[in-house]
Amino acid sequence: MPYTNLTFAVADRIATITVNRPDKLNALNDATMAELGIAIDEAVARDDVGVVLLTGAGRAFVAGADISELASQSPIVAQRRARVGQQVFRRYETSPKPTIAVVNGFALGGGCELAMSCHMRIASDKARFGQPEVKLGIVPGFGGTQRLPRLIGRGAALKLLLTGDMIDAHEAHRLGLADEVVPADQLTERAQALAVSMLANAPLALAGCIEAVNRGLDSTLDEGCLAESDLFGVLSATADMREGMEAFLAKRPASFTGQ
Ligand code: COA
Image (cartoon, rainbow, N blue to C red; front, side, top):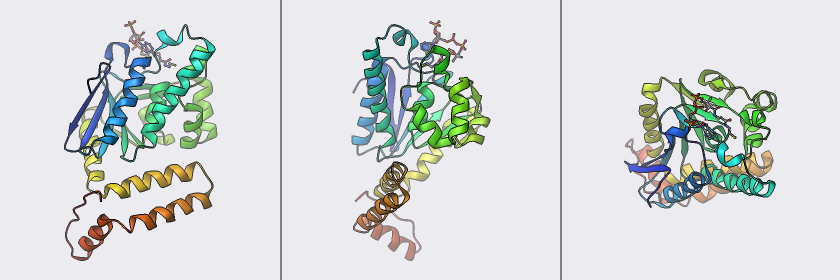
């Protein structure tokens, strides 16, 4: 499908979604948000995609929701905008294919929330993270108040939320907001390598890990373990489980089909 505010490219089973409004630091206007939803749906639906990389064009990952649109919003429009954004971001979080935020620059407000909705975050050493909404008189609207404390703990999350301060990539890594930091000129290469290492594994097992983690984080330990054991059982019916174990025993690399 043709996109206006982002690019969507597939190579070697890796889909790369690039938010592409560099003159506005990739701020998420409503049109871009809608395209992000279409893009993740396309990536999940396509058989030739196994892993999704999400990044930004130019010097930003995403510098937040588009303030020029927020400035005139009514309470009802604002509530709807937040719910639409939350639903779109949730699709990145619940994607059965790994989603990796490749944070090349500013990840502020909705950009930080989008990165947090991906399964992991790899950051350039030039990246900056923050939730500056309080400086605009609002709270985050795309899940930031919920995902940030789950990722980095209540105190560290509230420090970022209440100060609105930006932190650099190394501080984000120390807090657990970024999973890796790499020099800017190695970001793409490292993201591709991560994707390739995931692509070598059984697709249904990847989806099972994501589902178990998501379901567990939304429930008790016992409920999460129940979900895990169900998935463990279901995956034992797959051709890929037989292939993975036969390959191990035969001391050869496994070749998975996703069946
Ligand atoms: N919404 C709309 N436009 C944005 C934007 C946003 N969230 N973030 C940046 N832009 C636009 C700027 O208005 C500017 O547009 P212009 O050239 O037409 O004036 C362009 O992107 C470049 O931004 P600029 O502020 O000139 O770059 P900078 O290097 O001086 O500062 C930031 C970079 C990220 C610190 C600054 O742009 C910023 O604070 N952005 C808003 C971050 C924010 O509050 N996000 C949460 C929104 S809820």
